Image (cartoon, rainbow, N blue to C red; front, side, top):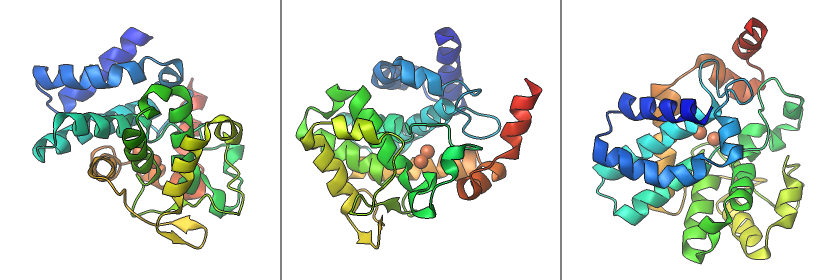
Length: 242
Ligand SMILES: [Fe+2]
Ligand SMILES: [Fe+2]
């Protein structure tokens, strides 16, 4: 399985015409995140379909590769490019496959489209604590993940319960990380939502890459509709064929 998933990543690199030197830089950055079992689960389209043809992992890696391309074009220094790629690797690590799921039967204010960046920030800091030791780096990564959907808003972690699928994990995080997540989600608060792009260039570049990948390169009308309705017929058909 791991071999197959490595092949998929190499195919994505070829799709975006990444040269050998850049390929090895991207591999070095993503590999420690990619090999973790929770990431490998998300490479499996049967369990985590992003839309009808691709897995969530495929989407995340496509974003990471495209983030690299934008960062290179903008001459972003190496360490910032790495951080931007790491934000891409973490940005959609939400808890459950959400399409066609009972989890979608939540109030709109706590729907997947609005809360998944919070779940991703919580899962990333739980599964990959080493990336969150340095205070400044933790702040940039968390803010990038939380505001990756801009200009779509994210749920503010205010006094109205957020009903997260990984609430227990959030409670177990140390208070420094909890506070960074809460503070980032309260920036640009309007009602119970936060509408703001990331404060940092690394997050802004990643968010831009996510739009290009989702709305241009790998667009799926069923996938976009599913963001609103939570249902994706194509995925039902896909699993029926198995
Ligand atoms: Fe997302
Ligand atoms: Fe995404």
